[in-house]
Length: 213
Image (cartoon, rainbow, N blue to C red; front, side):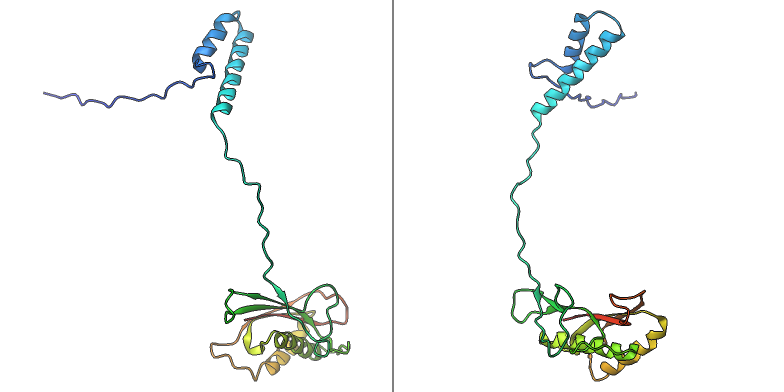
């Protein structure tokens, strides 16, 4: 004998009700009977049904409103105050360095971001050669770190820019010479060297920016 396996009953969703308790299908049928036959009447009845369905959906759903309150974030960056005796003042409204505490603990690590430094001495003079400018750039980086109570040994990254491939070797000689006395127990910092088309003033050949911690 073969037993017929019983199938679970199929559940169907109840028809959507309109505001007056009438389902959309019943409402559509009623409007169709009340109207004269024809494509125009059928389209009008269908449009009225859709309109009623939209009104029903609008009355049964209420989206959660977004909060209108806004939170103002307190700035955490603090400018590094430098001395004009150690480094030429910024050309515009910016700081030579900016430090960000990693946490509120007094002994926590700080991130110090050094703005791009050009080959300009505290008295405003600029050497004509790329190597002399590179030395001044790195000396200015060191002055900013000193103002933040850090040293070149705290460097995390160096980004250097020169205006010609011919200046690459000159920059690297100055960099290696300036950093020769630094000791990094875990290895030297990261470094990037790029060739760019130029800087704000044509006499500048090298620019160096840094991150320290």
